[in-house]
Length: 228
Ligand code: AMP
Ligand code: MG
Image 1 (tube, helix red, strand yellow):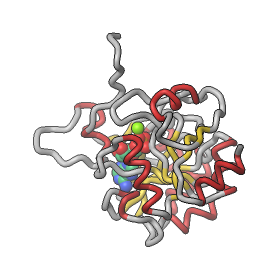
Image 2: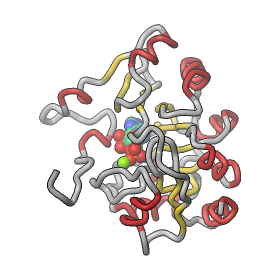
Image 3: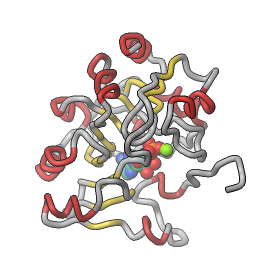
Image 4: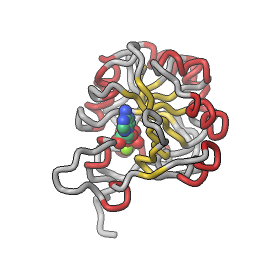
């Protein structure tokens, strides 16, 4: 199944893959036509960037133009794991992945199956494998419910151990800034680097007219189809 996933990905197809955070909808991060299919399957707004997943620290230089020392320290502490770091993007990353930004979010997942698929194929751009706005899938069957008929393959890697999206931390400034809270906390980052901060918009929402530091901040998430 993993070989089949890798073959489809190298052909420019989209595959549902397990990670420890939530299930991802993956495509070759260097192939803009393939990444376009992710946006179509999810109904995702084109200005919402994707996270690029790597399986080996050596792939970092293919994806990021400049890797800050602090990022290497956080990678040593928390990768593989549920931490996404924003860095200046390399020329290899098409604009569709970064939604036109000059930065890219990068993560090395802990789930062994995800890393195996990446090492058999390429660094993979992957958002959560749900229809945009809906709850994120934490089991393969959830992916099937949203995506059947839209993608050729879903790999079942069991239930996700973390179950919520990765922490997103911006590494392009002086002090690392958390743009999306997750399992790796501001305190854990500060313990490694001496300092960290969290964007106010994660607590209060965006002020009227304020531009989102992280495009995902402005969209509705986790809206189920049933009363809760
Ligand atoms: P998802 O893949 O659905 O978990 O969404 C990824 C989220 O990460 C996006 O909605 C953005 O909020 C954030 N993100 C990804 N890339 C960047 C970036 N280059 N700059 C800021 N935020 C980013
Ligand atoms: Mg999502």
